[in-house]
Amino acid sequence: MRDRIVVAAAMLALAGPLILAPSLAAGPGDPIVAARQASMKQMAAAARAIAEMFDGKRAYEPAAFKAAADTLSARAAALAGEFPQGTLGAPSGARPEIDDARPVFEALARHIGRLTGALADKAGDAPPGITADMRMAGPPMDGGSLLGKRPGAAEADPAKMPAEHLLHLILQDCASCHSKFRRKVE
Ligand code: HEC
Image 1 (cartoon, rainbow, N blue to C red):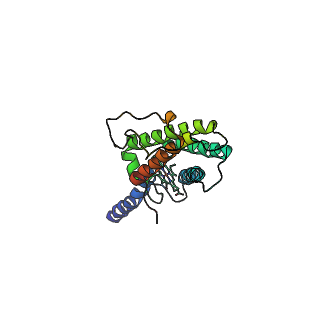
Image 2 (cartoon, rainbow, N blue to C red; image 1 turned 90 degrees about the vertical axis):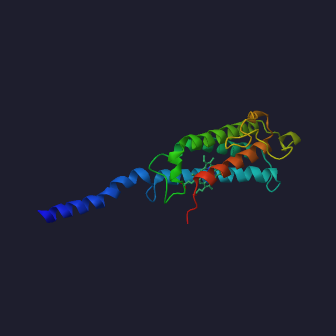
Image 3 (cartoon, protein in one colour; image 1 turned 135 degrees about the vertical axis):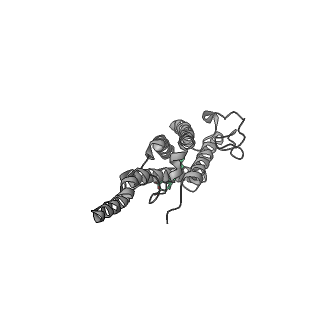
């Protein structure tokens, strides 16, 4: 009798982590994780394509600019929904802290969503060659974006910013979110 209780307790102890684990972390090969990592890679390829066109490292093509901006915008719009509870932490690169800081994570996703949406609108009437008004005039200034540079300042209207300026702000959003919510996976 006593032995049976001991065995039952041992089984419970073993079962415990198995019951808890799925709600806390992603399993290896989780399709949600694979899908969002693929989505991130598409964003990276699209951002690189646009950056190279503006830097003269790749031929500028209005249609290719538009296609890349549309990819960025579509992927950014989906971002907030790609990190459900139960898919965070190892072995993925998503920090479990996303779950404790949903409002911050979602604000970052909304912010990059607005910027990429504005870039896609501009790319929709992109001229045949890069014009001066598509270029960034000075260092990228955001009028106080969300992670607190100049918090009191009103945020500038993305629709009024040159495309290159928008691209730089978008890349800043990638970096801000990664520094908070992405961990290096060995
Ligand atoms: C709101 C937060 C957020 C934003 C904005 C964001 N990312 Fe990510 N990114 C993440 C997180 C979290 C991961 C880790 C995902 C995982 O491994 O499950 C990640 C992973 C990645 C990866 C690695 C994917 C892989 O194969 O493991 C790349 C590349 C990437 N992001 C590029 C970008 C680029 C480029 C941008 C901006 C255009 C961007 N990200 C914007 C949160 C963000």
